[in-house]
Amino acid sequence: MISLSLEPVRACAAPWMAMTDAEGGCRTVRAVTGMWRWRHNPLRRATDLVEAWVALAALLLIVLAAPAAGWSTGALAHGALHKTMREQQEQRHRVTATVVRAATKTAADPDPETFPQRDAVGRVVATWRAPDGTRHTDSVRLRLRQAAPGGRIPVWTDRRGRLVPQPMDSSTAATHAVLAGVGAFAAVGALAEVARRLVVRQLMRRRFDAWDRAWAQAGPDCGRTGTGS
Image (cartoon, rainbow, N blue to C red; front, side):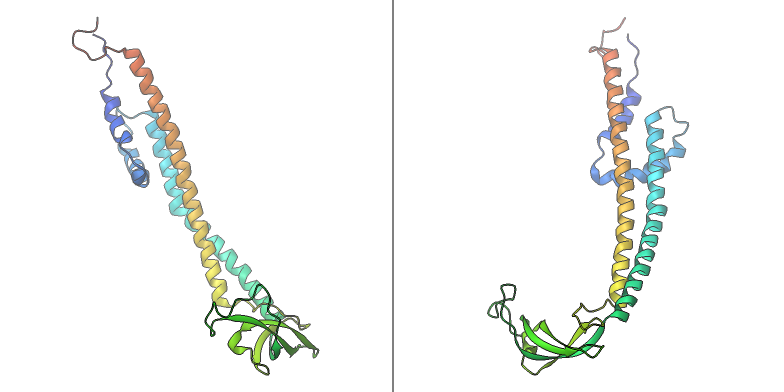
């Protein structure tokens, strides 16, 4: 009889063929922990060893590189945002403007019938004095309940009295820095896992090709009673 042992192939194929995407993350840890145990196992294939080393590299990236990337990105973003915050607070000034009249309604302004009166936003013409002493008049966007003529509203301007957005505060800067760090952490971890899965997919293709070649060499009658030489 033809003596070709495919039991080791079947034994190793079963767990790989049964693996689902949900188990992919657990495979990384199992491959790493099993690498030392399988180093002298006769069923170990070269692709098993490659997968174990790839899993170890991915695990190190997720455990070490991803937190480091997240911390570094968050720290850099925090420093840059705080610098921007300080510059904005130095260059922007809060002044009090006086409402003159309601501005002409534009297509961009919401319909008061659509929004509650207390939440509706519109534009008014207001006047204010800049930090350099000059007086300015311009259209200001504010809640309609503040739009009564003669009302006093706070606005932010630059040194020349031009309207600018409110400067960034420390809580906003910290929030953006944290989000940047979390994003970097997730990106590095995701890239490591995607790379591991791509390598495993290529290894699986090689295994299937090897199994096909083994079956072709064994012949269609391999394992049947009465066959062989």
